[in-house]
Amino acid sequence: MDTTITSYIETNKKRFIDELFELLRIPSVSADPKYSKDVFRTAEVIKGKLVAAGAVKVEVCPTAGYPIVYGEKIIDAALPTVLVYGHYDVQPADPLELWDSGPFEPVIKNEKIYARGACDDKGQVYMHIKAFELMMQTKSLPCNVKFMIEGEEEVGSDNLGTFVKQNKEKLKADVILISDTGIIANDIPSITVGLRGLSYMEVEVQGPNRDLHSGLYGGAVANPINILCEMIAKMKDDKDHITIPGFYDDVEILTEAERSELAKAPFNLDEYKKALDLSDIHGETGYTTNERNSIRPTLDVNGIWGGYMGEGAKTVIASKAFAKISMRLVPHQNSDTITKLFKNYFESIAPKSVKVKVTPHHGGEPVVTPSNSTAYKAASMAMETTFGKKPIPVRSGGSIPIVAMFKSELGLDSVLMGFGLDSDAIHSPNEHYGVFNYLKGIETIPYFFKNYAALSK
Image (cartoon, rainbow, N blue to C red; front, side):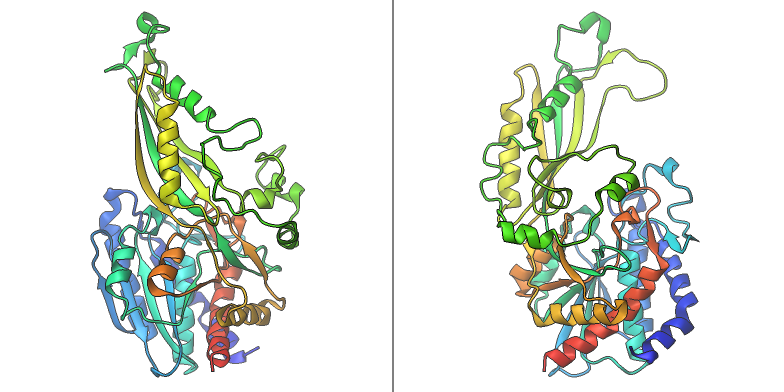
């Protein structure tokens, strides 16, 4: 253990937290246009933090949407280069009434930082900036580093691909390091080696040309809300198997040996149910909980609405009903193919009494990253140093669509060395990030750089 690292963190711990709070106070919600100025302001703050940490050529790069912050420190062109990716935008905080404290008023309770973006991804991005500062201030940066921090990850990274294609020379590196994932537990470190892809869309079902009196018209015309619910119900069978024709054609089927290896990750089903206040679990027949949320594809309704939703009663048949639906995909599935299959099936099961519309949103491809690469070994050694245990390789149920894009456009593999926990409530009210995890990330990242530089010789 390098006492220089631990000493620097201990000396600057309060400042590290205070600076993160400054970032968390800005509501950089990329999905809601009313926060547009705040998203742009966050990019400028990130730029300032990179400059203060010691990066050069720092710029806020415009895109057709929100900007990408770039910075670098090249100490020797002959040395390897690590490209650090992250995002500064956050999910909407709704429903606000379920937060115990203001989503953009960060507080520490029970050694956890509560705020929207605390874990996903401002806290994890800022670990890298502070780890970089640490290496610069202690004159221990062992290789080159570049930063690419975007503001559209939570809405599909629509403009990142264009930026990457247009800036391949600027982004030239040897590996990409990402902290937007997590570990199994604070005493069980892990490194993510697999991510699911994503196909996301909004559907609309229209019946009559206006809202109708449910007494005068009820039973005589199509009710779009009823029909939408029936159509959604037809998308899965009684074994929770998705019924879209062709949906499973390209799904990767793991061998029993591979499934046994994944099952070695510690998991307590009773604790899982207790944490979520569930009396029982639910999912595709024939698979364990951890398999259902990592190596199997899914279909979920993320939002559904229509008709009267105000206080009291209003007896109407709505003209329209809507839903947002996402599908998580596994290796070999293609998001464009799945989107087409969904659209065709959804339209085919609609009765003639309604009109339907399917609007695709963002998507991304599933990915499996190598666990035998130099970079993975460097990350594993780094975590073993700071946690005292060798990390377990795991597949995550989440999606980071740009990982596959980085591989196809830049030819680079990514190392997914995150420090969050499943219990951090990302995308939910009361999102939080452990002070332990935040500081442990700052401590671990310099060891990754040190190991990667040494192993790359």
